[in-house]
Length: 166
Image 1 (cartoon, rainbow, N blue to C red):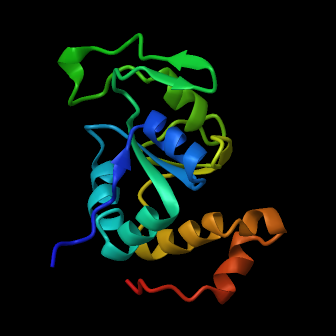
Image 2 (tube, helix red, strand yellow):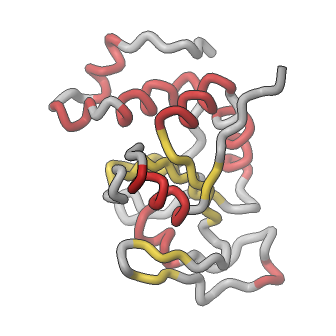
C-alpha cells in the first residue's frame, strides 16, 4: 500500500476550491535551503495520518518563501523583487507574500505553517519544525474552530486523544 500523500495546491487553486467547497487553508511556507523545512515535509507532512487528515479537512498549499512565483491575494499582487535565480538553492530575497502571512511577532522564520479561513483570513501561524504528534492536535483544534469557542489550546489538549503517539 502506498503512503498517503498530501494533495498540494497553489494558493489560487486553494482559494478557488474553498469558494466552491469551504475548507480551511493550510500553507507550508518553506525555503529550498532550510533543514527544518525538509524535516517538516518528511516527518510531519509525510506521516500518513497527518496527510489523510489534511487532505480531508484542508486545502494544502506549498509556498516557497523565497521563490519568484507571483501571487494574487485579496486583490493585490505579490512578487519577489529581490529574487536571484542563481541563488535558488540558498538564501534568496524574501517574497512579499511571505511578509504578509508568515511573520510571528514581526519575525520571519522557516518553516512557517499558516492557517487561513475558507475566505482567506488569517487564523494563526506557527514557526519551526513541529513533530507529527504535536501537529495533529493543532490540525483538529483549527479545523473544529475550538479557538473561536473560547477554548485555549492547552485546555483542548487535555481532552485530545490523537492517533499519533510518537
